[in-house]
Image 1 (cartoon, rainbow, N blue to C red):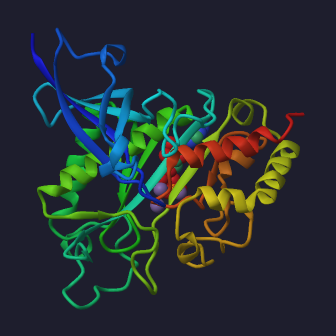
Image 2 (spheres, rainbow, N blue to C red; image 1 turned 90 degrees about the vertical axis):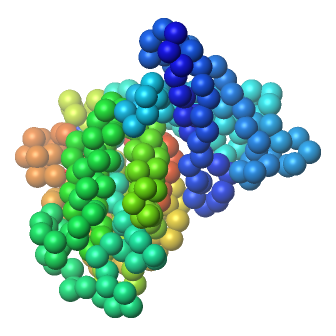
Length: 337
Ligand code: ADP
Ligand code: MN
Ligand code: MN
Ligand code: MN
């Protein structure tokens, strides 16, 4: 029987942004194992800010498995962290979120690739040309030499894993990139974002490159990084209508602070009203408006207010479990006509 390398991956207890952690367990299976065949495992929570030293065991409960094409017989196993009694650890944001497989999410994850503390392509001690030509750009002066190789390898590893990437692009700032992942169900989409983040971090190790997920790594006239959350429910896709849409937007406005609280740390640095954002203390929606909190695609309005909407406020360090769950909470407050 082949021996499989199972990389158990979880989120640690650091705040406000958890780190990804992983360790490998070797197990024999006839063929690639299913989720049900994976055992629970454990780790030392006192080393991850998830337990005190005197009682440090935490449990790992596998919740999703993906092939890992970078290793012979490799698997990436997304896990939830449980307390020794089997209940969710306080750091486990996944366990208690609202989920609905008819709620679809498309996350646009932006990030910077950095080397020695500078975004790739930034000269030592200075700045490259102002942003303008970098977005979807091509050529050494726009994207440098190694970034695209990383981005392409990341895409291939993710596709091999069955991650539902919908696209990639070079972003507005130099050294900034984006990938988009679509999933039916909050947990499915959010698990895939975390695994794609893990794959990118691990891939970048061998390049001596780090990923900066912060939402505003560069001061001044440089775009920050978001994680726009595109969402649709069955009702929005099939019934919709202007009246329902306006009621939904009123609920989003009423819950503005709750949404901002779930949308990632330091967002005040990014949501300034500049660089394709709405100010953090305002709420607005607009048709095809990249300066709005919620952008309504032309296709939505032109289809009798049916389809998907884009919440542009979630940021690149946000927890996709919390983001998706907050959106569904607000939607649940609005009665359907
Ligand atoms: P932009 O950069 O113009 O904002 P992208 O193409 O990067 O747009 O991202 C659009 C996202 O919208 C994609 O990730 C896609 O998965 C998502 N999306 C498309 N249709 C739906 C839908 N019905 N429900 C949820 N998300 C959707
Ligand atoms: Mn995009
Ligand atoms: Mn973008
Ligand atoms: Mn977008």
